[in-house]
Image (cartoon, rainbow, N blue to C red; front, top):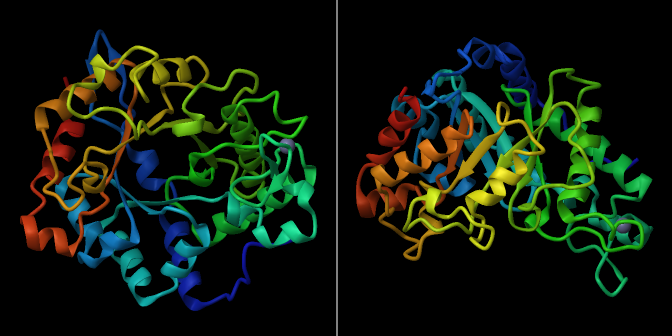
Length: 354
Ligand SMILES: [Zn+2]
């Protein structure tokens, strides 16, 4: 069976595993679970920021996140799990891990992973592992065929390998589809939507991870092609909704984007919550993502009041876990626009009880 990459066991990797083993889930378990009582909403449970390697040009992101009042930092790569593994093995990556440990933050990793879970060099050996396009031709570009037993077994095996290399402290794992794009259109797969095909993979991965960690949980990312709710496949225990409305509007409150035609509107979240539990659902927003907005080099068009309105909208649905991307908030941004005052306003909003 093909593995993701050679495991050059190193003291560094041992260190990160000890780090994770040392406080796996402790911070998570010690959080008081927010509850709804007569309309009261307590503070958010997961209060997180997602950073990418580019962010790390600004020193001590974990310290900044902690001082702002957040409790989780997630390291993201747009295309590759292997890229994160390689980064963690560098001096910069080790420093980042040590800073997370020093700050006492929960640490997670997420990435678009399918090209690493089913390595693309297998295409020349067995095209049946890979997805078919609308014309029936197989392609190594993005994702794979979910009705290929071999592809699924390879993906699950490699997911377990990556989980060991990149242990989270929350027990949550994020193996996103490539580009949040289409899955397979072979005769067997085409009866299932992209959301259903993706959920089949997530169900298989959580079963695999739970052989190593019975408390492992795996995200079902609702984003682009997988924004509609699954209709034929049910989530296995341990699969939770992660909702990322990347194409929503930010010039009006999210509560006003509540009809089906609204791109990535609230309607899609409500439909997904008919399949997934709101108790375990997580919002992945773009409130702090400079690159999401027209002027990609900033300043961030932060609007505290609009953020608080969006937050209230999500909380009314029972959501307790929140993250935002922070793309573009790097050393260069700080030089151009000054300190990141909105980090604390973001954290304060999540901490509010009302
Ligand atoms: Zn297929």
